[in-house]
View 1 (cartoon, rainbow, N blue to C red):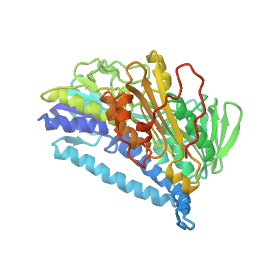
View 2: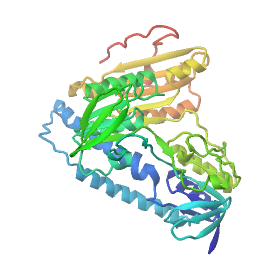
View 3: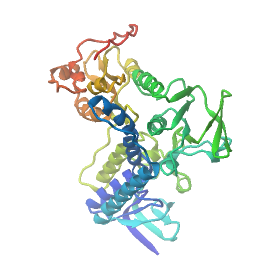
Length: 465
């Protein structure tokens, strides 16, 4: 039996669902296949459940801080199974919505694995059905990477399993220094676990602005998160209910769980890509051009499977742009400049544009403006944690090239700042904007003095508040 569609989408994550819905709204006959749950990494085992756990982990601070405002919080108790059950209920609700969106737009759903059988042919693995399509879109995302050569790899978990643990671990070793590693380190620490972060580099959050990296490291250490750098995990042994971890530097430690957060790899294995002539990058990602086209004219790819900018909103935009170009009245392309990014640690990081290091490499001269202060709330709470805000400005054009925040609500601030930066806002535009007082973000429109001239030695931030 053979059926024909204008578009067949493999993968019902954020990018695939958006592409299918938009293509169908243009009148295309669309089908989509998903072998797992609908919603993809972000909804099922990524940013959405992670953010729910982040909220949970911050209540310990809320209870402590409330005493400074006259509250008597008593002795609050945390129950991990209750949190996971509430999280699962919400994820189930969202999955129903994702399926409903597809069905209401007339997209045919196949709840099984699909693989390529030709340039215009898809085979459904379980049913054996062959489907023809004018265009095929691969949106299978990525998966956590675990080095198979790691001795004792069977004793570790990844971000996938972290959302389904039976109990909160008393202690956990998290391997990695990227945003997933630091977010889970922060989550587990906030919920009461003893956390050790192991990273092969010299400093966590490679690629982020140096002030953010150093600032978060300092805060982590004050919050009791141990950080071991210049080391990797070389062996994991199961001893009773514990894991014994041996590091490359010879250090041995015991923990309830070991979590690998050392990156993700594109989900391309077993899809039949090589059989139809699709070119893959060395990472296993699908190579695509600016319009999401692969080396096979009828086959396209969007999202993390292409390993370009691995963020959910990017996958959504890529899927939407593809559908508009392929089936809509007019096309457009995704622009990858000034993509705002949040790291949901406690406190969180928000960043958009260039780091200071990147800006120095790009421009002849830059101006730096930054400040560090205790948020008003922390004063009564008796908490010494400080917020960092920083502007990186192209000295020649005075355009704001980078904006960085380490502190409460950083992601909310940076999302709005990204709009101004994409409109070409200059430092003068920031200066002319009236401050909203009292707020933390008003600091961005009241920064007047250049903090550090190019080539000058770094100075110590003045105390404020």
